Image (cartoon, rainbow, N blue to C red; front, side, top):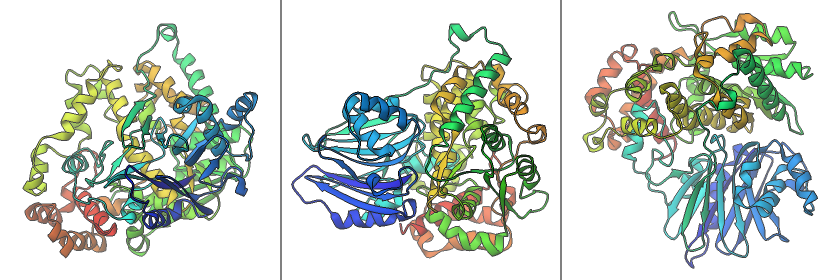
Length: 591
């Protein structure tokens, strides 16, 4: 796990090495163990390293293979790199390192850009070809690893984070009106290629982009799961699907143990993270480090789930670490750092939880497994069951998921941002694509390919990497995702959602963490802002920079500030925090 950046020029002007140095410096938290630069012709790559596999200098990056004429900057982990290495050695390739980066480089030479189809893992990379001057960018199937892009005069820059591109300068920082609509409407999910800034785009997941030295480029999408049950699996029983899911999940968890350092687990106490702990114990892991975070309660809303994480920790004898966060003493002072670590503004209340938890975890281990993705893959959210038999699935989905109507959006933002209902149009278009016929499958596909990428997955990547911590997500193993997509909806939706996964869990972990109300990382202080937290939001929205920017209509802001607890979204998020967070993010990024 690392961070990288680079530039490819399409004219005769020299590369801006000063900008590249500033970009790479901004990536330092993602890779505290080393850095490197490489330049040839019109291409430059820079890298920050977090040493996880092959801790020696032989796997330092950017990695250059002069014999093959290839150079690479790579972020992520290829879990099956040893098997691929053996296959490449059988083809005659000789290796000078023992890590996965060199495997990616030689796989690209052996099989071309479609080598990504052979990878089990999470990745983003840039590979420069010496002889042709061509640059290839790629991103993993589920978008676990990020890759941001910015066009500058005569060049293209790219980086693992948006703030790194800002550090290089020369970026159009005007607000993208389409992205603003998504942010305010689609629960802060801004689908690729958009970002909140006009001058920055992001490579979509499962995409290969080939860039020629003259600036021509072409994209290829290399993975698209089908949400239908094939004929040879239609006769499978509920028990049969349990066996398949359990076998695939065991493989996914085992794959993510590949490391030359210890691997821990983020343990919320829910089904998903507890199941990971149980499967690791089943595979013989002892003395496993597990980590939980909790916040103070506000009113009737409890701020932690320690009773369940403690139960799992005791049951499996883990080395358990808990952190408690007081909103005044810890949350407010740490919030600016958390916001600066966001590549894009993320409104989910639990972002600060992941940020503080990751800081604590980084003191003990460099790699953790996390339960993100299970709800989107196995239908765990409350909006899936009502989709069954829907006559207007896009509208029913939007009613449950989206934060506000278009009319409310127009009340909130300055009239210069009024326009089309971009988010509802996007949802309708995505639901209309072939490959998912049932309304539930349309919703699951949208959540897996769009919402998951730019909410939970991005949240975990940004907050863990802010502290040089690598997070691995076994529920997003692409083979497990494909299996779940083929499963009949009834088996996913039964038992109030995640039916098959709950049945699997009852065979592995204590039932008490399964047969209970669904929980999450609650942060009541941001959901029901009071006292110092409310004053912080007021100060942010009334700051001179906020008034100059003029994103929001003053009457709407005052309405939310007057009664913040009365203005919640359908997903029970704070509308006031949504406004304050966007403005705070812009201020902390120097925009």
